[in-house]
Every structure is written in C-alpha cells, then in structure tokens.
Length: 305
Image (cartoon, rainbow, N blue to C red; front, top):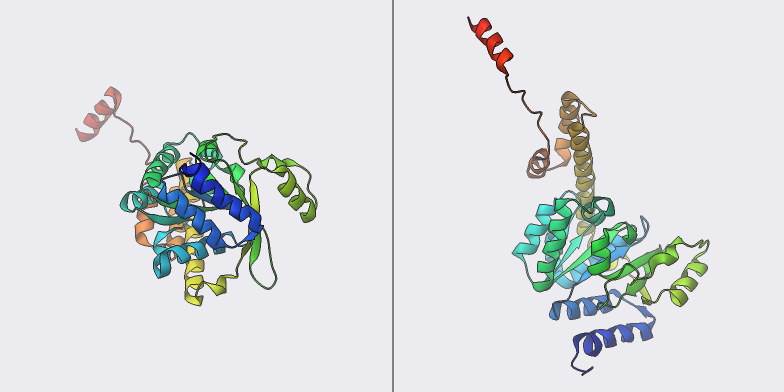
C-alpha cells in the first residue's frame, strides 16, 4: 500500500532524500513542486526572511528555471489587485506563479475581507489546475490563519546572505495530511535567540518540520542584467502603487482633502501605467449626494420662482 500511496510512496521518499542530502539547491524544491502539481495537491511555497537576504532572487530564479525567458509574465508584483491574481489563475493551468508581496493579499489582519476569502477559494482551483504558487513574505506568521493551516505547503526561510553573492536558507515541509497551526512548529521564533548558532541548533533539534538547508545562488548566475534591471523597475512601480492605495484609503477616511489627493496623484502618474491607476481609482468612495427633502424642494421652487 505504501508504494502506491501518493504521500507515503512518492512525496515522503522525496523529502527523505532531501533530508539525507542536508544541503540542497533550488532544483530539489522544483522536484517537490512537480510532485505536488502532478498529484493535484496544494502547492504553496512561501519564501520568508528579513529584507535584503534574497527572497525575491530565489523566487525569480525558480520561476525562470521552470518557465524559461517568459517567467516575468507569471510574476505578480505589489501593484496588482487580488482580482488580477484570480484572473491569472483562471486563465492558466500546469504552471508556476510568483507573488512578490504575499503579505499584501493574505495579511492576517484582513482575514475577514471578501477579497482574501475569494483568493483562498481560487487557490483551490489552482490546485486542481496544477498551478504552483511561490510567494515572498518577511514573516509567514503574519499570513492569514486559513492559509497557514491549510494551504501553506513548504517554507523556505532565508537566514542570511554571503558577501560574495548568494545566500542560505532552512527548508521546512509539514505533513500535508495534517491541518493545524502547529504543523510547522514556528513557535521557536518566539524564543530568545541571540546568535545564528543558537538559531540553527533550535531549527535542527526542535522544529519537526525542518528538512534541510538550501544554498541559494547569486542572481547573476541565472538572471540576465536586463532581467534584474526590469525587476527593479517593476518593484519601483509596485511601491508607487502601494503609496497610491494608501492615499486612496486616507481619502476615503477623510484624512486628506480631494485637492491634496489630486496633487499627489499627478506626481505618481509618471511612475504608474494608466491601466493600473484606473483600477485603483475605482476604489475611491464618492461622497453621497444629499437627498432633497420637502423643505429643500420648497426652497428650490422659491428660487426658481
């Protein structure tokens, strides 16, 4: 039975092979992703770590290794809306998507919002259509509980980078048959760990989902100069779009005036394409016009008379 079982006969041996290797490359993760997609299992890979350690570099390298030169077509930056991600999933199958700022769409503080619930439901379609998702976030504990407990499959936690280029990460893979907030065992992050030696000791000895370490190559080994430059430009656009969304929230809350907003928007227009701007402007809540009562109707009649 074990030999023909998906989890026990195929998935678990592949993970055990990684465990014995102790240090793997990104291609071993792509092999696991292939298994998950082949058997229509949830394939949600979260790349975590502090800013500047190379999360996005790893994501981009894996996307290019899987998709070739067209990899940027499947990269979702922070200027995209939830509807854009859903549409991309609806239009594709048997592929890999990258979400550069996963926290923007699955933040635990927005767990009750309809957009987030819609995205989680669409991830079920992604599973059925053999679509894997790579997502970057600083801390996976800040992602919504429903995603962490039931969808998050693999966590690659980038710990540090090397001066000569590249970085290294710890790889965690939970039992896919178990749905629980404790299945990854990330409670170790709440302890007082003052040194990297202590961090690694706790990872290796106390976190049951830990599988192995990963050596992440330098970006220039796999990405062209033009691709790196284009990604940085896309990142800048995403930051500008995030600021536009902030301004719209402030306008809707009446924290800023319409003239102030219009002036700020004029400065952002050269940085963001018009299509994206129009999508965001639809989020503005226009003031409701006051309905004329009987007294107002009489006033208008007097003025007209």
